[in-house]
Amino acid sequence: MSDIKTIDSLEAAGKKVLVRVDFNVPVKDGVVTDDTRIRAALPTIEKLVGDGARVILMSHLGRPAGTGYEEAFSLRPAALRLSELLGKPVVFASDTVGEDAQAKTAALRDGDVLLLENLRFDKREKKNDPAFCEQLAALADVYVNDAFGTAHRAHASTAGVAALLPAYAGYLMTREVSTLSGMLDEPERPFVAILGGSKVSDKIKVIDALIDKCDTLIIGGGMCFTFLMAQGLSVGTSLKEEDWVERAGEMLAKAKERGVELLLPVDVVVADHFAEDADHVTVMVDSIPNDMMGLDIGADTAAMYAEAISKAKTVFWNGPMGVFEMDAFAAGTKAVAEAVAANKEGDTIIGGGDSVAAVNKFDLADQMTFISTGGGASMELVQGEKLPGVEALKVPTA
Image (cartoon, rainbow, N blue to C red; front, side, top):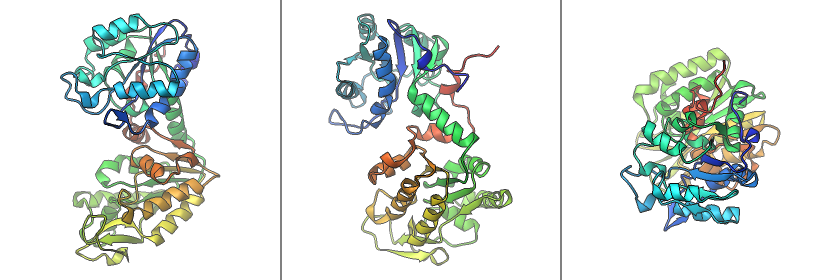
């Protein structure tokens, strides 16, 4: 992060500061139902308010058509929740760069906070349209990006506008990048990585990158069945990607060659169909019935994974071990979450997405060292990709 300026070096008093936040939060009946992402931005917002900045916040929410206002995707509920959390009024603009945004920006006083309407109501946001970038930049004196969750997108608000104003990283962005980069560059060892989720094809670059970095790689979730097939096992009607079996075999060989311990399930919970009330039983992985599907890791596997996690000095976890949304198939994910939480000696990093939902479901979030707010962004960083939202903040070197 040495080549990126942070808000600690920003003299913000009296300046209009345009801040990209990630307020892509769930809303039901006009009320924010999970304010985790809003809370994550508070340190940056409170720092700027305290310094006497005129704070202009911008975000997207959901996937509107990009042809104008849609009530279901309005950020007004986020403005109301932010006001409650800050304990002060938050002005809301009914557009992004139009007359209302311009008038309300001009009326701001030192320490005021304004939230613009959903960026994606304008299709030019996702296209990184130069004219839209200029309209956003015209609202402010300085730009801050605190939205790590969208840092892998080269949009107007994450990349384009950063080239038009003095650009800084907020506290959340700084912590996300430094934590994840530090884990990859200089992990305390043993370094145990846990990957779950449904598809090998979605995680192949991450698997490849982590085999180069970690000491033990734990595989769970639906993608484990493609790896089991690569070992010559039959997996019944379990989720599998036959086109990726050969590639999974190559990953097993690479891990062995690198001296990386790659752990796969020894037993799984199988069901006769995909439903909460399905008949289910635990079987060894070499005995999966032809007419049943694996929906969770078994107890023996959970114990084996927990033992490996307990010895780690660095743990990175992305992806559930099974269909944890259904209580009948949540035990494996819960066991892994509890094992990660119980490791008090190491750094435990939750890599966004469903893993965050899992630790929240089992009420273990406060026992983790770090929880990333960006699923896609954290995965791209782990697999060695450059993130447009981070690159745009870098100070050009002579």
